[in-house]
Length: 348
Image (cartoon, rainbow, N blue to C red; front, top):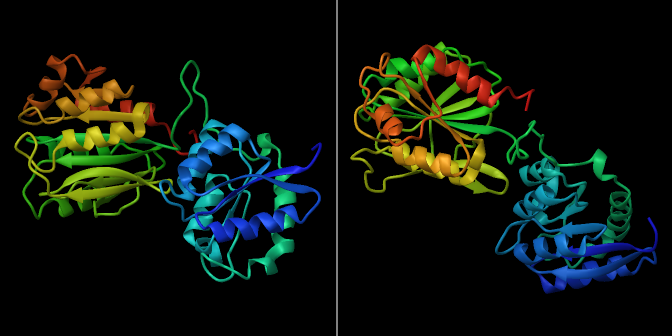
């Protein structure tokens, strides 16, 4: 690498930015080219200035450090060292940062404002120099390419299954044929009375290879796992520090029901975009039709159960009449279509 190693310093504390800058500039092989005080500014400067190395704090206003790292890595390879009190002792933030592509982490010795940071001077300088030598093609967060398709935006996909009358049997039929290494998380909205959804989730888990539970607020989505929306609560998704979490709420009913498939589908499509599939099975009413529309709008896929195998062809028919169904399938073929769409964890 010709010339000095160009370093961007990101920290919300003016004092910490000053101390870090003094440390970096004390080495004749390094130079601080710019500083940033919040996540938005950090992301903009990382992409515009393309520093050789960025020191990035986890705890930032506007956009936290993990989100900055994830967003930057989607656009180009960046060499990042996480430097924060939140990376001490192998904490979860450290692990997540490394998963996202951070090259190394350094713990501030005395919390967010560490006036004694200079005692880590040699460690900081050494790690910056090592990071600057890392080649992008050996340390990348790029997502796999599909032939003829856009780059995958997420490490896994999400499948939203909606059902009502006649749905429990249909859902079980579908879930029984799912592999345990499915490359997608599954969200199930089955209209049923309160007190039944936990047992329904347990039943699915017993009869399939997919680990299934009644969703709880804060559950983290992961491939090969399924979550049943609890009766009485809408289930939505929230992106937080590189994770996708389930959030439950008791907002007004949609389509006269809570949980509503429309609510979950819209939320999933807004986060996962083209990596979203909606599956509408037997049920009365039209819940799922508006959600299917959002999924299609975002580039995702929609399949519905056919009339012949549906106990009530109401919800699937609403999707069909709106021209939103990519496939109309008998229930025994739905699981194969999901597997083909999602792939496996190993294959993603």
